[in-house]
Image 1 (cartoon, rainbow, N blue to C red):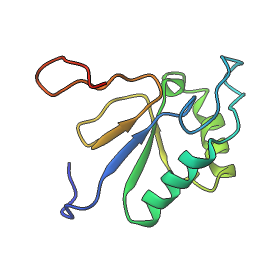
Image 2: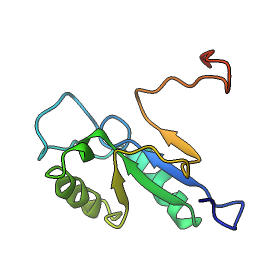
Image 3: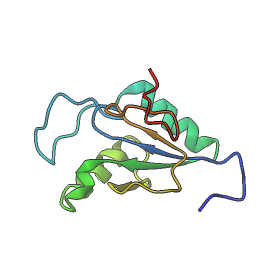
Length: 110
């Protein structure tokens, strides 16, 4: 459900390859170094009152979530929700693997 504040957005941010560097799967306990520009962006969104949700396939495995939360805590953003479920409340999804399409057309935006 949208906030009463029209300026407030909910950003869903992928972990591997977007917020954290990714060089291939090394197990649930390994998460790469933060991507500095993306981490700054996330912190700026939070500072301006937006909501950020970590949207990662890792959350499909409940045993992986504590490793994600620990990594987020080390970056100073440990309070963020972690999920692998898409939600209607997401205003934007930031992900290194997505292809944006024009609404109601299926035509990729390139």
